[in-house]
Image 1 (cartoon, rainbow over the protein chains, first blue to last red):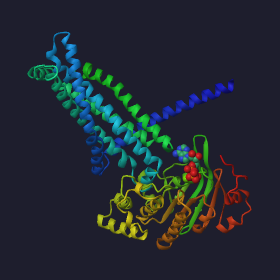
Image 2: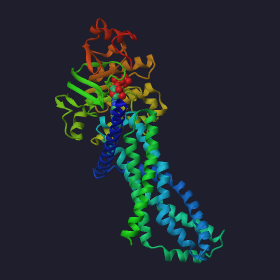
Image 3: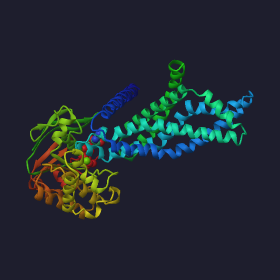
Length: 265
Length: 249
Ligand SMILES: Nc1ncnc2c1ncn2[C@@H]1O[C@H](COP(=O)(O)OP(=O)(O)OP(=O)(O)O)[C@@H](O)[C@H]1O
Ligand SMILES: [Mg+2]
């Protein structure tokens, strides 16, 4: 009995130490990555490659879900607003939801699923096949060579992809609202323009920037600290997607509150 | 010349190296043998400065890798090292040519023409011409190891480290790798550490053999001394017997 208690205590203690040291290591990793950004010479070629991988390669899927999200928002918005006889505001509802909320969040979730898992798997495989050790043995800093380009590309690509998502989403909403729902195109546009403030655009883009940061940090870190074998890569990839997605949704709440209630009030 | 003094390394509770003293002579090849999981790769990584020991020192050509304060100080010491990794560790995203050119490109002190000249020299020496535009996944493990060798030799290292140069190879290609090590040594000359559990095949490239067991050095000597040894662990390992002092986990 006492043996069982001791072993359970040991397990809990061990787990606590693991969690605490993992936490510390992930911050140290972030710190080293950020320092790495400012070390010269800047690896522009590697950065462009990642912009292509993360940004260009995600554009199509972002555009696709953008159209449908905008379309759904128009249908749902019109339905809800019709209860108050306010369908004229459908354009505003579509645009505000996309700009402030759904654009940044859905883009982030999509990029995490597509590019984040790929980054973690790629770096994880480089870890288990000793490619990262090989880099170090050749005096190449893996943080600068592998992490910095991905991290930075994530931070820059995310607001850009979010903008594409929003613009295409609004177009999708407009199309559905003016054809299927028979709303007046002029009203849709003018109500939208008068309702949306620059502050809304700012808060959407700030969110996207933060999500890009989280995306790069989590997917690089999970790959870099990946465990042994195929199982290790598998676990790291799953954890990377789950951690980053949860972080985005939780942060979204805090950011929304912070931005609307305190910063841009 | 590499000297290892009183090296201790553990992972959590698992003690991997428990006081290793080792001298690697200049211009000679020292082979480190021992059963799987004994810590051979760990020892190599400590020598490369990639893992940090709890205690002990590694000196390479008189400079202490373990006491090096910064990564750039370590990099200076590493500049005399070339490494052939266990599964070659070629970069998947680069072609064979770019893999070979990589170490010199990253040094940033050579023109692309100089890099090309050196890379072509290596490609020719190791008969890699047919593969230069291929990616690592498109070539066999034997060829990958040759590419890894070419990459390791690009910077003219005075010390070469081989981590199990012929795991994953059939006996014929395995023999090719040994021949390659011999040829390279005859042509360029280097101080070598070869990690292996292939006894007695690896003896053909060994001047000195060191056997690790349970975190310590069980025996060191010439290949001849190993073959005629009466140490039960050595006999067991040489003959591949299940019974004996080496316990298989
Ligand atoms: N980064 C690490 N973290 C935790 N444990 C490790 C790490 N690297 C190695 N080990 C453990 O240290 C022990 C020695 O590993 P090492 O890879 O040196 O063995 P080896 O002698 O090279 O074996 P093999 O012949 O199979 O390559 C193993 O039990 C391994 O699980
Ligand atoms: Mg090994």
